[in-house]
Image (cartoon, rainbow, N blue to C red; front, side, top):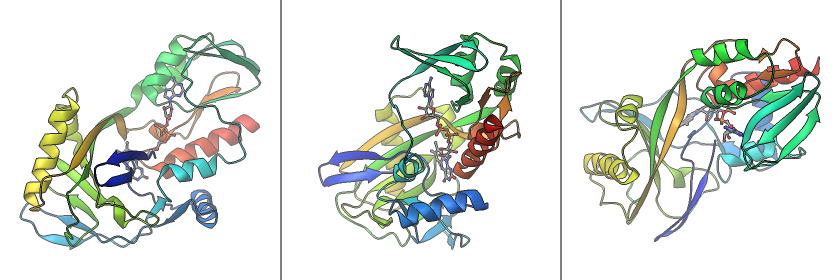
Amino acid sequence: MSTRRAETPLGPVRFDHGAQFITAKGESFSTLLQEAQTAGAADLWTGRTVSIDRGGNAEALRDKTRWVGTPGMSAIVKHALDGFEVHTSARARHVSGEPGAWTLHFEDGQSDGPFDRLALTLPPEQLIEFLARSDGDFSDLIAEALEARLSPCWAVMTVPPHPVDLGFDGAKLLGGSVRWMARMNSRPGQDGPDAWVLHASPDWSEAFLESDPETVTRALTEEVFIRFGLPMPEWSQAHRWRYALVTDAPGMPYRLDPSGTLGCAGDWRLGPRAELAWDSGDALGDALAD
Ligand SMILES: Cc1cc2nc3c(=O)[nH]c(=O)nc-3n(C[C@H](O)[C@H](O)[C@H](O)COP(=O)(O)OP(=O)(O)OC[C@H]3O[C@@H](n4cnc5c(N)ncnc54)[C@H](O)[C@@H]3O)c2cc1C
């Protein structure tokens, strides 16, 4: 749920280059989003969404409540963290100490603690590395994290030279390399130049995982701009989400270590949606508070 602010030749643009919109089925996440809306950090996206098949036939997507952050997705995360003391840009390396007195060590050599409880919400790959370097009995946590699978997603942020109305603001594309495209300036709180995010399909992203961003940008923009007859973009940039969408999840919202004072959570435990990440963290929070 991140937002990238880019300076383009046509002006500044906020790109939501990860999650495009989020949905809430349960009460806990719905309440969070409603509170974020009241605080001005979220709103409903009412853009025209369609599914387009290989032959170019468009069909409206099923109606559902689609939430976005305002002015960008990351605003929802910031809202959820309001009131907490947050330290960013510090990469946790390992934990030492003992249950009830955990010390966290960072890659820059700094450390912090001791902490009574520790909630680890790293993606599985990073969690495994972190735990393998740490003191403690974390074999069950590592074994479970090894079961999780995430597929990658190449995203391209792109700005055409002038606005063109394609008749939709978000499209699921069937066939081809690009799976999804969305118009950033159709989102509440976003004006500025016409700007799109393109997401490649999991298969394409996997096949071109190690390609350079320029090659990926060219391949994906050419496919979409030619398909829809858009003038070639004025500005584009690619971002690789190496661990994007959960395909295999252990299915339990959290897992504690044998002492019950350290645990892990994240979307990878339940499935590829922001709400599931929230539910997982919520459940871990309750378990650690017991
Ligand atoms: C391209 C894409 C499209 C998506 N589309 C949708 C969508 O349409 N709808 C939807 O509901 N969801 C969507 N999602 C999924 C949604 O974004 C995720 O489910 C959710 O953000 C996961 O939250 P999380 O906290 O579990 O993990 P993350 O958001 O991955 O957070 C993990 C954090 O751990 C940090 N970290 C990693 N290693 C370390 C370390 N060693 N020390 C400190 N920090 C570390 C990372 O920097 C990251 O901030 C999409 C995701 C992607 C990538």
